[in-house]
Image (tube, rainbow, N blue to C red; front, side):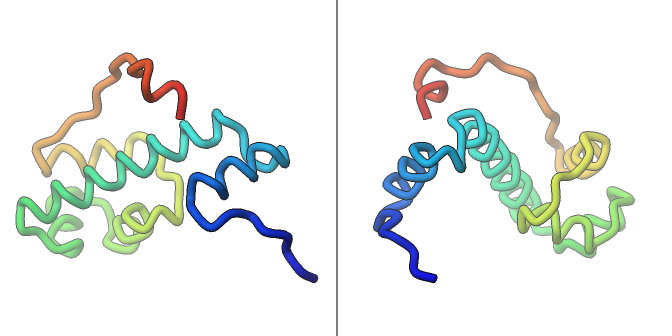
Length: 104
């Protein structure tokens, strides 16, 4: 099985997947928000100088869950995210989406 050209850049790939109906604009927005959240979690943990094991000890969330959360391989429940955020000195906020972000 051969794949037709899907694009040589991430933007071209996303555009082609949207065109083929395999990925919706909403899927892309949700994915971008997940990537941003994961990035913030990783950055906050590293800023605090914590290993995943240390974060487990202070958050009560098991290290394998933290690892899967950081890799993006699982979609965690909001309670789990909040348990990890609190000891990192972070909170989850609901804010309006900027117009620019709506056109992702």
